[in-house]
Length: 347
Image 1 (tube, rainbow, N blue to C red):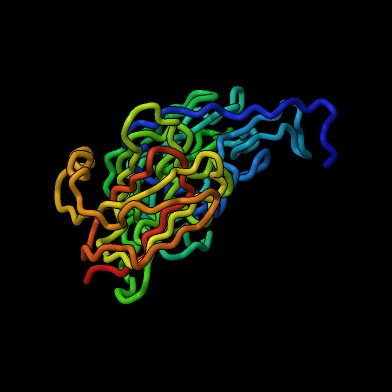
Image 2 (image 1 turned 90 degrees about the vertical axis):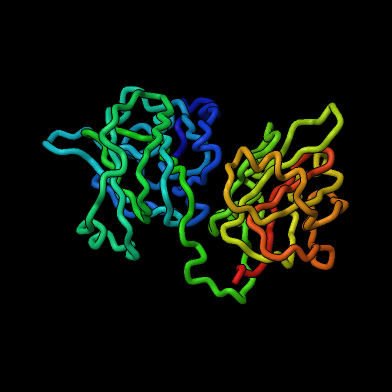
């Protein structure tokens, strides 16, 4: 469709400060780890898949398509019959859910007034099979506001593979983030095979960090190479002694054999050096790990880094045995796109 001559400049939703339970979790509804829109009762104004887009919601004044105003999210038509709209999405990995961010950014007179969410654990992605599945309430019916983030923490301890999202009675949701933790990634894993033990799809997660001014530490664990400089972990310019660091939990205990540090897209702002400490930790809390990690043994001694490059280490790795957590140190500051810890599961 030919762009309208009245289209204005794109407005991107502003970032928000995540609550702790979301900051230390993984967005299980991220398509980059396999999440997918399965079906919806209606997608007249905007398709369900847009609701899962990991990018912030955007608004383009004056942009229209064949059905009306173009909206960046999932939007149904105005319902003129009894009932409500709903949709089914597959999580990227099955997991336990800590809570949701139901984002109605840019939806003002057309947002969904209320939402509820159910979950199921099923191997099939067939829409007809899912429609007949047994569904369990995960989030009770909750009122929504227009153009707002709704951070909704839950206490449900179930493990879910799919969610059924109900909106009452119709309208739009810009983004749905499902914050939780991957479960059973290595349930049928080959203990003799090499796995990326900290990949987000394998249950790895960022536990703590001293700074993430320009990019989240969790980006280190995403699939593939970084798409741009914003798709990595980047700290502010350090103006005092010391160095920056982040703590990462492995998806399962394992023995590291290869380490991959990728500074893709970081050129004038990559770290000068890096090192990794590691330990097997039983018990404690995420907060207690921060102090402990300063005294963990060295897994990878300080290594020189270079701009926009992939760095491979193997012979330099210390034989520490099975570990569960690492402390990734960068000197003195800067940005790293991806970190991979290739190893074998602890037997």
